[in-house]
Image (tube, rainbow, N blue to C red; front, side):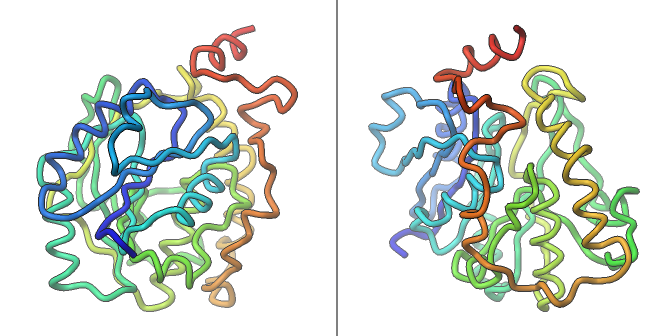
Length: 274
């Protein structure tokens, strides 16, 4: 590993990426880092002129994109964040400082965030990061004291050892939950970041470009997740096949038509409206 951190960003909104990248400069001032973007639409050319920016073109589902991008990350640590947010000043510095001082390779820093329309979301209570705070996670196979993390910072080697994400899930929320629960079954701890790391925009329900995510989570991923955790703790699958993404489609059919792949975000929205 040649860098301390890889900031991994799967995304469909390259018009936001320059602002996100600029925010990394004040979020991480003490450590060598890179930003790894993966998604279907090309970023602004000037963004790729930075020697710590990578981009990989891909039309896969979000879990597959994240899993494939980890193969290209140089960082000892990986932080997955979103492409409609910006990062808070020194948030990464403080998280890595804490990680180095107190954490083992099995431990995860939950990079707390807030989200809302036009980035005007309220701060979330600490209880929000506990699984049983959420009604849909109150399943027999999920411990009451387990934590969640949707923007985790984790050890790259350990992520791969556990097999990373189960890419059978169509969107990233449930595969994050599954990964974080497997970490806790393996003895790892989930530790909240010292400050909120990210302020993100959010499209509620099926508004904006969010409809495929809504469909993925509720029609496809909820049943798969309940099958895994609904009756008992699945301790027999703490470690899974890291290359499980190879069994998944190369085009995410819930968002894209394989025969007519859009080349820009605007073209994607236009096709969805027709």
